[in-house]
Amino acid sequence: MDMVYTLAQMEEVAQSLMKKFGTQSVWAFHAPMGAGKTTLITALCKIVGVEDRVNSPTFAIMNEYQGLGKVIYHMDWYRLENEGDAQRAGVEMAIADSDYCFIEWPEKAINLIPSDALHIEIEILDPEHRRIFIP
View 1 (tube, rainbow, N blue to C red):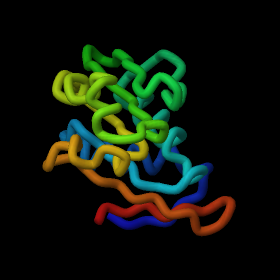
View 2 (view 1 turned 90 degrees about the horizontal axis):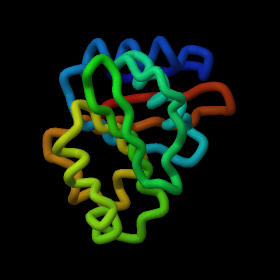
View 3 (view 1 turned 90 degrees about the vertical axis):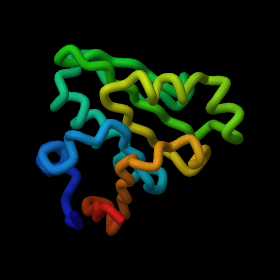
View 4 (view 1 turned 60 degrees about the vertical axis):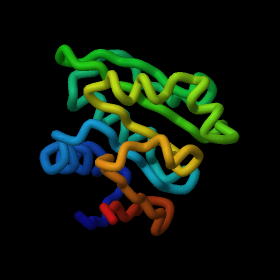
């Protein structure tokens, strides 16, 4: 998958990703600050039935949601210093126990990402356009 989209098309992008990769449980989002990771994850959470307001877990490290009988974790590892911080935060158990786990800044503790995880790259092309691709 490789597509260019505008921020207004975020829900369509999320639908397309879920249709193609919805069986994947762990999704790792690689992108610079301001690329729209949280916005895309919010759209994905809506698709899987999360009715709560989805917020960036920058300070909490991870937020847990319920949707359609599934457990969804949204993690933001930006503030982690190393893998030990992630382990102390309980991310390994959360990854194992989730139906979906969406991780921002996975490179902060890349060795904790399961080998079968879906890696998604988002590139900022200009203020309105993004390129998303699966390496």
